Image 1 (cartoon, rainbow, N blue to C red):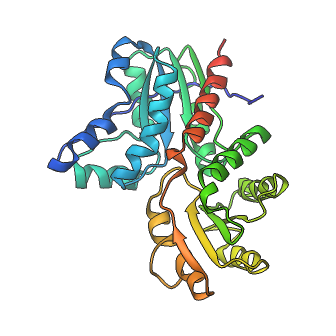
Image 2: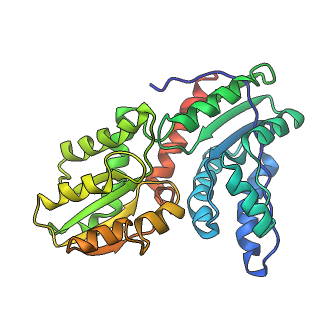
Length: 304
């Protein structure tokens, strides 16, 4: 059972667009999960979906946007709003695309001003790391401004979550599972204790019989060198690289699939492997979207 923290907070997300002619439909998708459903949603009940964010427009729509859409579909009585935690990305989108997205403080202030009484905050973070802790701390400063508030768990929290994610990523990559291919997922990594989720996910994969699946990180451990050493222990001829991130953004395109000497692709190619990079974020997987929907349900149930 997921542990929910009751705190005061608020949510709202503004997004809209403009700028490039070819981006019209994309920005409309950024604005809201479902305009038709929002018309019937209670104005005082809101789900704020908080993501780190990405400046890759196409990837954002089919990952973060898809998660938001799944949550809106499951909870039509709530307004679903968006906030990003990366101010750098928020500023870049505004300057480059004319797209305005709230940071968490702006979203919370907006929710207060809009008269929201029941707020559920669902982060799309993978783990309970620094970003999640910062979010909880900020929500706590709003605890007297709402009647009810709950925060959902990150993606990888319970043992059931780990098994569900293993099922999701192995199902999505089953076409590569031919006995000759090492399937390697690149996570972000963190200095926080929560970095242990990568080891636990690897252990879960192994215990479920997926011995040709490997988990590494770009900024912590296991590193690409650790993953390469593990892959070399078996007789693989091909390596498939895929991001263990909600969005296939900068890290996936550059640190994983880039042409630089230290990219994962280059490291494995130099080791003699045929390499295929799959630029597909976890948020594109319906099974991953459903985990977030389940976490929202647990948060809502905790308010009863």
